[in-house]
Each structure stands twice: as C-alpha cells, then as structure tokens.
Amino acid sequence: MTLIKSISGIRGTIGGAAGDGLTPLDVVKFTAAFGAWAMGRTGIRKIVVGRDARLSGTMVNNLVIGTLQGLGIDVIDLGLSTTPTVEVAVPAEGAAGGIILTASHNPKQWNALKLLNATGEFINDQDGKEVLRIAESGEIDFAQVDELGTVTADDTYLQKHIDQILALPLVDVEAIRNANFSVVVDAVNSTGGIFVPALLKQLGVNTIHPLYCEPTGHFPHNPEPLPEHLTELRKQVVEHKADLGIAVDPDVDRLCFVCEDGNVFGEEYTLVAVADHVLKYHKGNTVSNLSSTRALRDVTEAHGGEYHAAAVGEVNVVTKMKEVNAVIGGEGNGGVIYPELHYGRDALAGIALFLTHLAKFNGPISALRASYPNYFISKNKIELIPGMDIDALLVKVEEKYMDQPHSTIDGLKIEFDKQWVHLRKSNTEPIIRIYSEAAGEQEANALANQIIADIKGILNI
Image 1: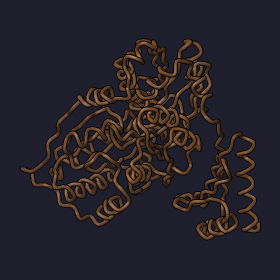
Image 2: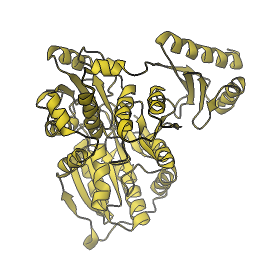
Image 3: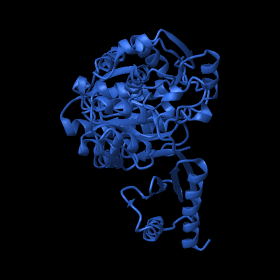
Image 4: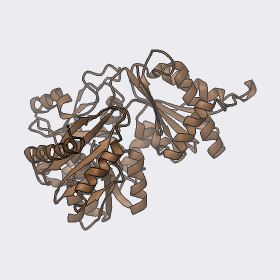
C-alpha cells in the first residue's frame, strides 16, 4: 500500500492500514486539515467538491463531504466532474477552495485529494506544507451541531464550463461544424465519457464514435494516455475512417490525439499545436516545463514570442506563466493551460482550440503534425545506492558541462544546440531520471547514454 503526501494533495492506494494507504481515516484527516486551512485563510465557509468515476469515488466523496460538513463548511457537490471543471467552479462559487477526488492517470486502486485555493488553482508549496502541518498537529476544531455545513448538489457546471469554452474568441464553432469531423473518443470509462462528447456536439461535431465512454471506473487499459495504451483507439480510428481520435485521462486534464492513419499525434505535440493556433492570433510568450519538447520553443520563436521553461509540476508552470505573462502554456504530458479561461490544465479547452486549428489548417491531422519540427524524447533512469548525495553528483555533472547552456531550477538541464538532456532526482526512489531530446531516437538515446557514462565515471562504477 502507498500513501504520498505532497504539497498539492494526498494520493494513495485504497485499503490497508491507516498511514500506509488512502484509508477512510487518512481521507478524514487530510480533508479536515485542508478545510481548516481554507477557512482560516479566507474566512469563507464554502468548498467545491468534484470527482472522477473511479471505483472508490463514492466512498471517498462521502467521507470528504461529511468531514467538511463537520467543520461547518457548506459543500457544493459537483458529483461526476473533471479537474478543470472544478477549477472553473471554485471562483464562480466564491468558495474558499476546492477538492478534486482523482488520482489522475494512476490505475484504479489509486485515489487522491487534489487541493485548490480560492482562485481555483493548485495550492503552492508554502500552503501545501501548512496543510500537512495542520494534519499532523491535529489543531482542528469541529462545528457544534447547530453549525454543521450544508450540501448542495450542482450538476450545472458541465454546461457552464462548456459555455465558457464556446465563448472563447479563438474557438470557432462555425469552422469546426463546417469541417464535418468524424471523431473517436477514448475516455477510459471515466468522466470524459460524459464531458467530451457533450462538448463535441456543441462544437458542431456530429459524428462521434464513443470508445470506453461509460463512467463505470473500470478502466479498460492503463489510464495514462500514452501511445502504448491506445492501441484500440488507433485501430478504431482507422476502422471508422475517422478524421482523428481523442484520448483523455480519468480527470480530463491531459489530452492527446490519434491521426487519421492510426499513428499518434504525440502527447508532447498537443501543446505545440494549440500554442501554434493561439500565437497566430495573440502574439506573446509561452511556458512549458523543462522536460517538455523543444518544439514549443521553435513554434513560439517562429511567431515572434519568447519561450520560458519552468520546473516540472503544474503549479510551477502556472507561476512562471504569470511571471512572464504567457498567453499559452502547459506540460508535454498533454496538459494545456490557457489563461484566457483559467490557470489549470484543461483537456476540454484544448480540444476546442485544437479542432479550430485543425479546421482552419484545411488538411488531415497527419499533415498538421508533419508541419512541426520533429523531435524524439528518450526517457531513462539510473539506479543509485540508497543514501547517496544525488545533489552533489549533479553538481559534478554540471561542472563537466559548465560551458554549455544549462539550468538548475529543477535538477540539471543541459542544452546542446537543439538537443538537451534533463536530470532529475526522484523524491521516492534512489534514482536519477534522465530525459533527453534530439531530432531522432538514435541521437536522443546516444545523448542519454553519454550522460549515463559520465555519471558512472564520476561514481567509478
């Protein structure tokens, strides 16, 4: 069993002993801490709650809502929802914060409490540490019987979220309708099966082939939307002669596409394509994390903008986007953050912007993909001796490549012309993750192997 307590939320496997997994006791403990923190920070006694469709969702939802009521907090329960929909609802409701019950791309045995502040954004490092401190201290006063919170079920935010997307100036419903797209949707039997087809219909997409769109929580494959997990979607796109396939993760904040020929568009290129569309009409800066493809930088500079890199993690990307006033940003895992709508990864907004872009491109999605610089990312890791000073090791690697452009804001990233390698230590294992990117798989692997050899040389192994 696993329980991971991080600044942005509590994630764990269901069952086992308290403190070893996400048990009912753990759910209550951390929900109470967050509720106490949110009330203390804002003075507001209202929190929005929504969940994906995973099997433990009802149980966790009941525990969370009951705990918040016990604190004297009124709960707006969105029921089956998406992460970006809850992010939209929090400020709309004037709430103190939000809790999304989802373990994102993790398998069915996992669930989590993802924590939002009053602006509907993930809480930052300082606030997350305070929530964890409150949880461990037990400094929580529950409400008397006459002051218990209320619960209001609200299923209107599906449409409210879609209405906000349709109102975006860079979403062209007429162009999408005229393109007469045929689309296959893989929603991994979670809430995307409700939200994505609803959005597509209102965008004017009349031919929708649903695949795994029943929100049962029985994931038919690994829910992370990676090429190796999308074999049936790729097959169905070809069989239906569809224009494209769309895949989202269980909480609908990650997005990827399949081309009409069954090849994947590439989750790294979701943000690249959406940014290309946005930058055509709204010149400005872009942001992605250090482990994302260089193609975003290429596209940004081609439009006269400036690209900026952030440390890995959505909250870090959002912080950098605000700092540089970015018009679009996100992560290479298929996460699109469009601040015109809100500061959170939003697959629904990404779908609307992408389909507008594809409709105006006036060609097949495979040709759109071919129009972008082609890079390959190689993902490797090297296991180290437990207890080893990994930070000191990274300093030695940095010294070896001191003359190359490099960044130490998140591990060590070294640039070699249009190639790069990014070294990050794991927070849970004695390993260094090594991501490298180049124009082809062979070159990317060669760069990774070069750095691995350097590390082994430093360690004399």
